[in-house]
Length: 188
Picture 1 (tube, helix red, strand yellow):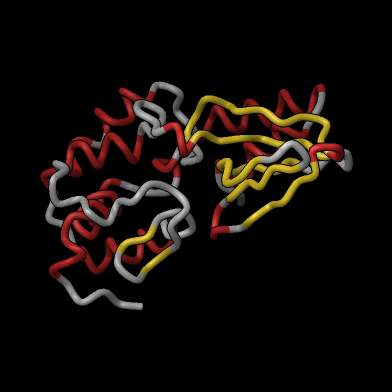
Picture 2 (spheres, helix red, strand yellow; picture 1 turned 120 degrees about the horizontal axis):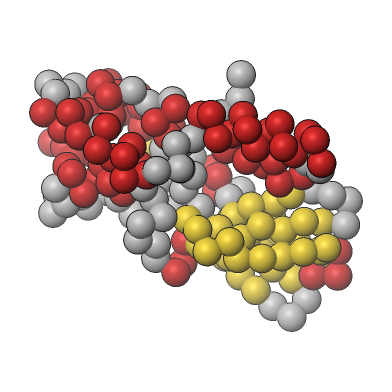
C-alpha cells in the first residue's frame, strides 16, 4: 500500500483513464477540506501524550524533511524551536501545510525529457541548470535543456494528507515530542 505522497507522483505522470482512477484513489485518502481535518483532530490536543512515542512518529513521517535535535534532516522549515508555538498552531501547520507557506518552501515540479517527475524546493538556479532539494535532503541537478517542464506549484513541499497515516493518539504524541524534545533524552 502506498501513501498519499507516492500516489500524487503517480497521478502527475498518468494519463486518461489511469489518471482519473488515481485521482479518485487520492481523493479517497486525502480530505481536501483542510479546515475540517484540523477540526476533527482538535481532540488530540487534550489527550495524554507520550513524547517518546511521538519521536517514533516523527522519525516515520517527518524526519525525511525536518530536523529536531539530532533526528532528521533540514529540508523544510526549522521546527526545532517550537517553544513559542501553541499546540493548536502546530496541529494546524501539520494538517494544513498550505495555509501559510514561506516562499523558500514552495514545491517545484520538474518533468524531464525521459518522463521522470522530480519534486523539491528550489535550492539553486542558473541559466543552465536548477537544483531541487527533496526528501531526505536529496539533491537533483537538472539541466534546463533536458526539462520538458518546470513549474512552481504554489503549494508547500509538505504534503497534505498526513491524517491518512497518523491517528489522533499519534498526533498527540507527535506534538508532545515537537514541543518537549529539548526536555527529554532524544533516542537515535
